Structures are given as structure tokens and as C-alpha cells.
Length: 135
Image (cartoon, rainbow, N blue to C red):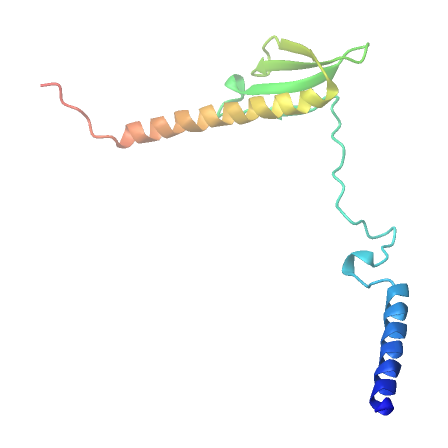
């Protein structure tokens, strides 16, 4: 009867040795793989050069197209010059914080594009709509 007990005692001591060895070894996970400096973990977005950052609104004619251009004054404050066509006097908006400038210009351009697309859609639908008779 002592033989079965001694085997279980031996297997228990062997199991505890294996558990201790496994506990000492770090677990291999895909995240734990070493990375080199040549392989970035996440793509890094290039910083935007805010000085002279510019967007052009939609439209068929340059003379009626909006343009928004960021400018920085001597004291480091940022302004946005909004023009219609190449020869108009700019409407200057600001001062703004550096992080607000790109967001402001992008929002103005999106809104301008949305309005242009709506107008274009109305004009296209108007051409295909049946003529109403007032008689």
C-alpha cells in the first residue's frame, strides 16, 4: 500500500517542480516580441505646417471660389484669412490657438462643399423635373 502512496508523492513533487519552473519563465505573447527602431509600432502622423496652411472651396469658377489660409503674426498668434476669388480683400478671423486653426479651416471647407453639393443637386433635379402648367 505504500507503493501507490509513494508514487503519488513523487508525482506531486514533480508537478510542483514543473509549476515552479513555468512560473519562473515569462509567458510568450505576440505583444512581448522585441521591436527594432526601424519598425515603428504605430504609424506616426506627420505634423501639419500650420503657417500658410490653406484649403480651397469647391466651385467651377476661380472668381467665386472660397479660400482659407492660416497666418501667424509677429507675436505668434494665428489668424485665418478667408477670401472669395483671387483678388478679393480677405476677411481675417482670429486670433486662434494653434490647434484650432486646422480644425477651423477644415470645418469651413467641409461646410462649403456640403452647400455646393446641395446646390448642384438642386440644379440637377430642377432640370429633370416636369414643367408645371399654371393654366
